[in-house]
Length: 367
Image (cartoon, rainbow, N blue to C red; front, side, top):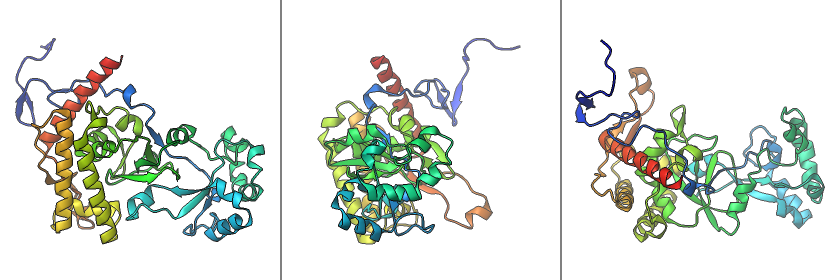
């Protein structure tokens, strides 16, 4: 006999009796996918898609297509106006590998200029005609052929949003993937590559919220993956994330976030390790150095402050070294096991369930 109607028997989730089991296999939080929230619109962007190494000045380009930095210096010495259209250029690799998130590349940037406007910088246009236009002429998309002096995706909304800002927050995302979700502050004078997500939010509390495990579990659950890495997508990970009420004026969030950020920055400089190498140590079960123990403790304080902002101080923040996934013996012998210093599954699921319920509540309020 086929049973019709709602199931009324005992429900077990991971061996525990629960009142319901949602479509996400949680004990609460509803069944709907998270909604994009109007409150989060217009604050996160993907960086520029340049499409053409000939735009760049880069001494590390092994293919020899990029222009040498000495050529940039020569052109600026010849005509100082050329510096107006040459910008520092940075991508996810530099953000994650450099202890100071320093850049080593520059890029010609004409923004949304017409060809006639761009011709006012003939030295730079000559470079693009020689090194970019031949490849752009082969592109199938009409605007890439017709507007060869512009980046493929110029991101005018991002540049408008950065006006008046001294700095922005970035993380590896967009078309890039990252092992760890780590956020960094950079000046707004950069052209950011498409491997970065850029957040144009003045309040410093935003770092605390996004770097916390609360946002990390959300992003890892609803973001996509590329190999073993997380691909952070603003529309799925940021625009859907329900922030706690009053976060913009929460001094506790700002204080602990600043303490964490400054300590991490000093640690990276001292050890000459970037974000990826630093978090490799952070998540290594065998790493017991005092500097990493302090970073872990600060991270737990940051999580506690964020949970308190939501009114969820009942959630424990103690972490364990747990495998992200199991490997067979052949694979595990070749590399370190994928341990992560994180919450146990019960805490992970509880936080996600509450965030899902809050997302639904905010969505209903907005609509």
